[in-house]
Image (cartoon, rainbow, N blue to C red; front, side, top):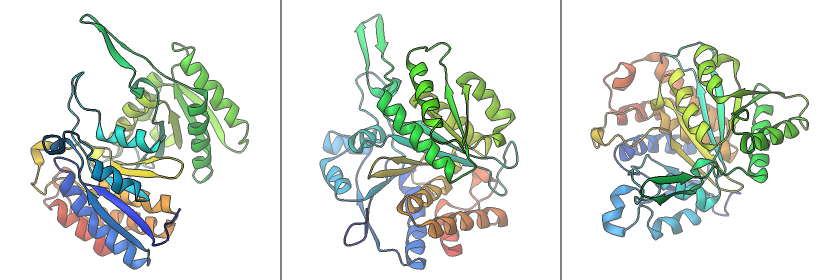
Length: 340
């Protein structure tokens, strides 16, 4: 997967606080590649709502070309307007373009960050291409709108395979979240595929939970879960809930992974009211960078970022306002880079 001249990374800062959190992450990338002698270069591309006036789109062709000539992309948060005639999400466009079918969102208890339970360490694996987010959403007339929930065997098979393969590297437990008692055909298919895949992995514990019950269990016993696999909409909702159990979306990283390409991004939004204030927490973006190095196969480098983040949090001297500190976003990034 490594290109002949080394790794080539496209970086899109996005909108709002995107520039701040990406800029805070750059020293971490630089420190990591220097310490571990990783041949990595990055180039910046434009993307986000701010591009529309200039280019007529939130994803300019120059940025598309940059991404296609790169091994992966790091994306800051981008603003997505609401309304039936508005632009598609920048993240969704990139996911569709590179068939990034697995959205991976870890939630892990961190030092000095409020967590509802000790020992939480789970990952939600969300099918990223289908469900109600497949784009089959339209108006019949002014009084009626229809959204079609698309579930296919092929998409279920590859996301379940991904989840079981991930569990082999972790605690050996996969939980399917579904609503097959109501959505009998679509989630019934997902459940069938899940248990078919589970029989190929006899050493992995497999079970399933209805999505409404899971919203309870993530509050009362999140420490009992390891890998959770689910469809698109359910995954979007419960992954934000899972992030809240370990301190909120400010520390929530994400990876979007396909066969031979990936995108890494924080799970939080663009928070326009904080634009340019150098105030917000960059840890979600920095932990997304950690996931990038994991995806590349540099486990020691990824672990060094995790250790550095935890060290800064444990010391508690350089923290942003949401974690009870007064440090700037950029100061947190520099402090973490210094630990690396």
